[in-house]
Length: 136
Image 1 (tube, rainbow, N blue to C red):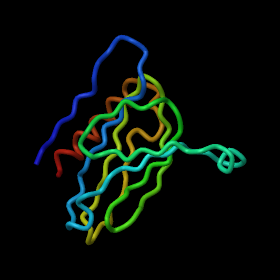
Image 2 (image 1 turned 120 degrees about the vertical axis):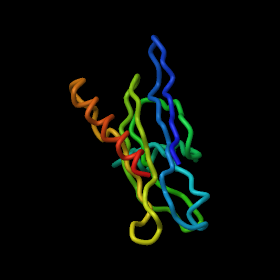
Image 3 (image 1 turned 90 degrees about the vertical axis):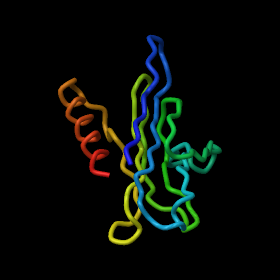
């Protein structure tokens, strides 16, 4: 089934917009998954600063403060696929859960990994994402 998401459009300074998309086609043990996002701290900060942690539902768009986050999948089957997510203000991101639970385990795909430097590369990346959605 095809689903579409629209990022809000504003002229003002805004937080990053993150579309959390579920493209996983697996069994019931994985169906109630959520995206766990926590502040990313390393070194001394990791031991002294408390992390903010949020559980996000799939197939929604969230406004998230600029920063670096640890993203992972949380389901009845446990937590998997730890990824580091770098978010910048006024940018749009997609975090997609993929896999089928048999041949391909569930995993996270983050788009874009690093911000594209030109409009041509942004268009190419968007076209790739659109093509992937049409294959599902």
